[in-house]
Image (cartoon, rainbow, N blue to C red; front, side):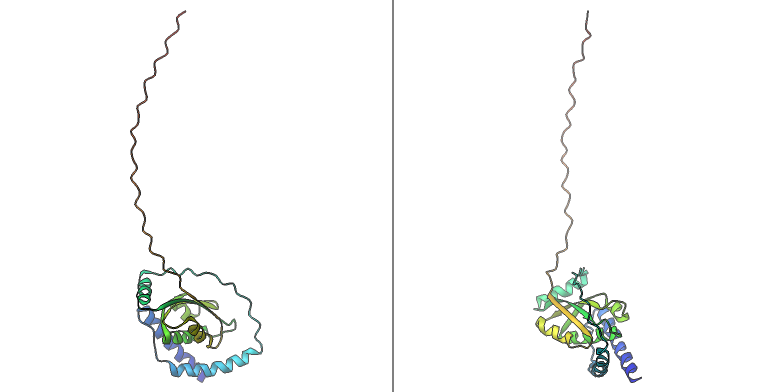
Length: 201
């Protein structure tokens, strides 16, 4: 029951963080106490499942289309002007992970200590409801080196793999080119052809 109480407490914090991000906030919350409780229970859970765990199947990395909206682009551009780096992170959880929302919550808490989450794929609401596989992506703004961010996430229980790369330059919004006016060429009137004269015998 104590374990369930901790989970519900963590989920409440996660819901508040998600709502804060949706409302345009930074999603930061003081969850050091509940995070420590989760770490203690996670250690026992990991030890118990390690004996029966099977080697994970290799996963093929696929490119992600971020499709930033106008608000997200503005946040990213302003952060980069202030010296922040933008990283695109792919997090893979263990196949046997039973409480994905809790792991996502712990990852977000670590990231919010080091910077700002600009976007997630799938959306934060989907991550909260655990309606995704084992992988999710995070666009993250920070002034810390990529290796330190990777270590932060990798240190969380049930995180199988972390891929981090510098964000590609944002594509400028393409403006439709105005169509060139069609030049009208004068139509030449067909010249009158001489009528064939009737042959006289």
